[in-house]
Image 1 (cartoon, rainbow, N blue to C red):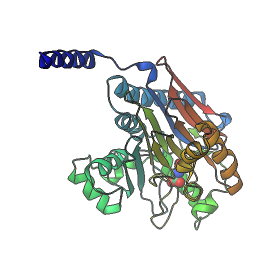
Image 2 (cartoon, helix red, strand yellow):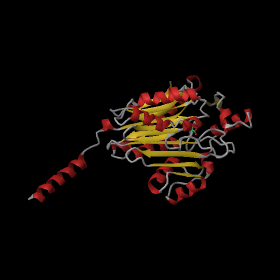
Image 3 (cartoon, rainbow, N blue to C red):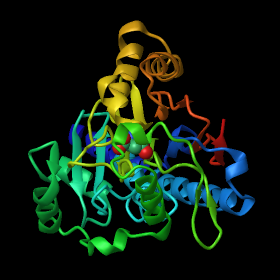
Image 4 (cartoon, protein in one colour):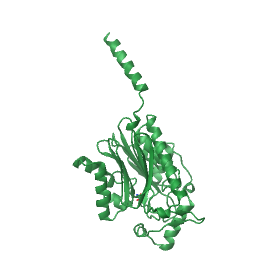
Length: 347
Ligand code: ASP
């Protein structure tokens, strides 16, 4: 009898589990497509429209995962893959060029429930570096892999490998030539002193985002779990195997269910030194301030005093979306509790 009752309860539970739809009002995803000197006068209406459409597509890709019961980690990946596959952003196809005319990409991902994390740095043949970061997290005993070893690992787990030429785009090529023409010895740091709009032959006038343009996403799933991810080509004209903050857990990416999820974009050297993503989460944990306040303290005060330009997108455990950036613009968007997508670019 007792077993019968238990059995009935179990059946009832599994039926309610199977039929229960995720409460969509609790699902959340927010993204960025890079921060920098992005001025309205440097962006044509057509280009602005293209950016907004791609941001919305990325949001929808991630949100669909969440509404079909997928995890925050999966949602973050799908949103980022959409932007990696678009030449509009400095990640995957459209990544900036290094000083040596190669494309070397970095990415990381973190799961807020477990504090598991994965990252890859300096890869040139993996079509979607965010998938590699996720594979490092779930299919290796390591947190960060780099260069050739990371590429071998990617192939061994069946990720799509492409010819490095896949990442070539005219726009990024011209940006590199422009930076090198002005200063053939330009270092990563001195390049940051310049503020120009890039003009690609053929007439398209691009915003001056040759410095940044990284992509990132944060998500909250039906289990109340947070995740954050970031993917980038790094900075134009970078040298010597330079690696920025994007693949560094605690700098470019951090997620902890008890504090929040953060993905950053900006001048990586500063973001590493300021431990931006972790510092924001730590401030909310230790001082009890909101994630927005913690983010503003770090981005608008601490980083500004250090001279670091950039911003973050974040989500707190209750699903409140946080944006903070000290640059003139940041490509960004989120989906609200009614499922509506919002995108923005300028301050
Ligand atoms: N944070 C990236 C880096 O320093 C650049 C960016 O955000 O666009 O590599």
